[in-house]
Length: 321
Image 1 (spheres, rainbow, N blue to C red):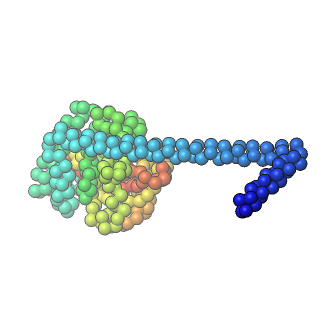
Image 2: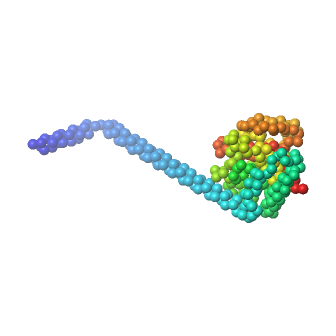
Image 3: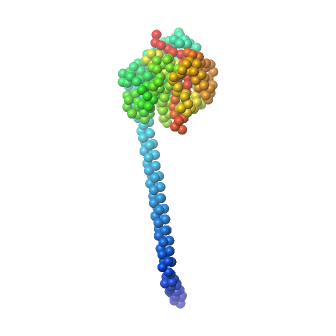
């Protein structure tokens, strides 16, 4: 009985549907067809957008992976390159940096012509070893400017290059081969006779593996700044000792890397301004017409225009007797 009722209900429903179709006008059928087409079109557009977005995110992910792999490969290349350089020099390698950190107190030096008394032997030994380094590399590339060491850091112990512009050694090593890490290099405006420069400016990358000038950021820590005071610049003619007096973040267009000044008074004004920008104060720093400074500059890995700057006052020059 229930089956007969169900069959009757289905028949009635079918009849109503067929009857509604028979009564539907051409306009009604067109409207239904247009609505159906709109829905299909919207679905197609939605699918296209979804596929485009999926493709975009996959592409971004692939580019990111490739970039990371290339960066890591660049870091490894730099590590191997400088390791091979020290092996090539074979003169005690980074031990010179640790010996530089043990240079006698400034109280035992002369103010211009180098150390006095027993410290002279220490300077002679360090200078001769470093001069051998510099001249060995200079046979490969005459663009070698000197060698910079910052005691207290683990890795700032590098040759310094100088090109005809400030771009080439940004991504080339001392044999002039391309390398992402580049070199530590002097501003091309600087004189090769260091004492002639009001401001000797050195540049280096801020690498994520603590190479090049990345450890300059350690001076942003007050305790590190207070405990580590010196930068040593070696050349084939002598040792230049700078006492660090300033660390700050700057826009690269702000003039902190200025090398030329109309007069000694203009330079003194500049030096005092640099000192006033420092995050921390170093006592006993004064400037006069004979003053000379060094500027170490690296990027912050933040805004492209931002730089970290560490500056030191020349407090001693040692020339080989």
